[in-house]
Length: 153
Image (tube, rainbow, N blue to C red):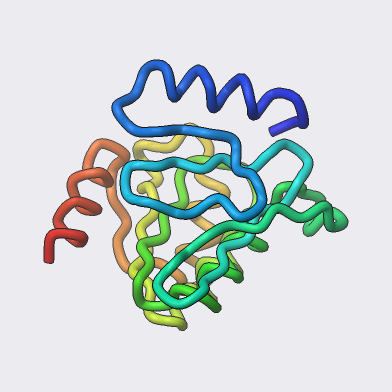
């Protein structure tokens, strides 16, 4: 998402959903009921200090032609949260996220991707599946229910 768009996008989502949605800022805590969106043209990393998870926002170079790049986020999540993670890749072009999702799975995360039938563009989910980075391949409509089942157990 481009710089300048993500703040208004987050504000709009925040106004219509029952969770807090905001454009991420350095040191924002990761909390239940909060959605943090990477600022346009910046990377977002997950960090941990004791029991507190938080994000760092970095103006690093493009990674695989992307900024923000989900592989940057997924790699830091694997490092700091490991088996406390549920990773999800939905519709998208290319292979962005497949390597980071594999890092997360290797660190103990449970990963989900959207199935080909419910995707308009199956590039990113397909790359994650081919990278052996996925535990569950589900129709879009079934993903939220699966996440709820996983967090309740």
